[in-house]
Image (cartoon, rainbow over all chains, first blue to last red; front, side, top):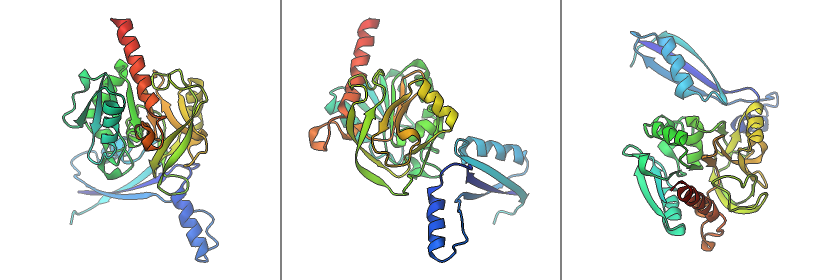
Length: 83
Length: 227
């Protein structure tokens, strides 16, 4: 079993209203050093490793998990045990 | 003229769309559950607003993986008119039937009110009964209606006159004030505002009715011409 950690972020240059709201709130709390915040998504998949996991994950990301028009993705694959 | 209104789990403007076609326009309409849909016998397909699959992952993303989308693509290629409103627009974007993507509204708020739209292109099967540059009143109701596309796509949309409606006072941050676009072929229209909620005076506006009437007129003309 592999554990896949997927990170999906808005592309650079794409407006992130949620990130902007987080930044404003952090600034309000006194964290004035925060110049920008970007909010993304994190997913964990547990995948059987009798397949080419990397190829499958690549396909999953481009077909469904990320929208290539607005989002970038990256992932790591490690050994995992399904609880 | 026979309309199919596709119903997904989470669609909630399906009946508005159905009554717009059936009562306001006075034509035939069926509510079609997405899994049972056979779209081959319909003259036009309507994708209603709502929250298909609870907007999980991204609005319209899960619906775009359903089997009915293959039929939508087939009908789109054949020239059947397809109108996607709000979540229907998001499904068209996620399916790749229209270019671009939706982001959350610039102010992060869900907005629900009447908006002024400008008809940018009245030479389409969806807008022929409007005047060019006419200002019309159509309600919006969305949290994720901030249309985004890259510069190159925008130039293509402009060069091919695919921008059908723009906002008079852009409420959500959409690129180039875009409220509705069509495909290059001109038979697939996606728009965030709800024309089906503006088909009678008691709804606050009847400006949306002419969109459905445009479709009907066009269908009649091509039907008579083709007969």
